[in-house]
Length: 92
Image (cartoon, rainbow, N blue to C red):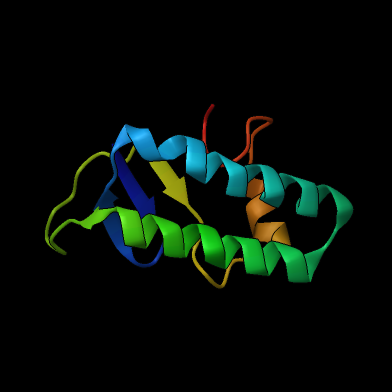
C-alpha cells in the first residue's frame, strides 16, 4: 500500500503493519474527541514516525496513487478534523 505524508512524500507500506498503525489512529480519535491538543500532537508524531520506520520511501520523482493520506507533522487538531471521516485516518 502507498501512503502519503502530506508535505513529505510517499512510502510503500506492507498491509501487515496496519493493525499496529490503527492503535495510533484510535488514540488520535480519542484525543480529538476530548480536545487533547498535546496528546494529539504526541500521537500524530508517533504515528508518522512509525510509518517512516516501517515504510520504504519512494523516490521523490515517483507519483503513485496514494491509498492513504496522513497529515503533515505540523497539522493542527482542526486541520485533521477536516481530514477525518468517521473511520479515522486509517480505514479499518
